[in-house]
View 1 (tube, rainbow, N blue to C red):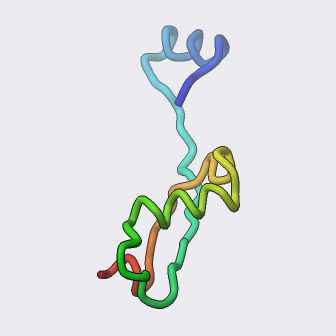
View 2 (spheres, rainbow, N blue to C red; view 1 turned 60 degrees about the vertical axis):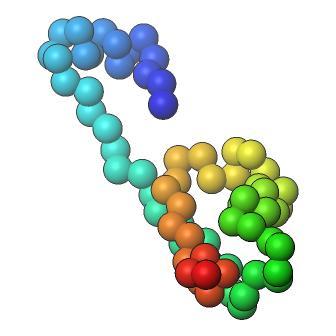
Length: 69
C-alpha cells in the first residue's frame, strides 16, 4: 500500500494515518480439485480470469471443497 503527498503531510502533522477498511470478497472453489492440481494452480487460474489487478482493494477469502483438501 502507498500514500500520496497529502497523506504524508497529514501523517507528519498529526502522527496519524487514517485507513479505510478493505472490502471483502469470498472466492469459492466448488468440487474437489483434480489429482495433481495444487492451490497455486487454482489461484493462477483465478488470476487468469480476473487479471492481476482484479482484486485490488479487496481482501479475498478462499472457501470451498478444493480449499479444504
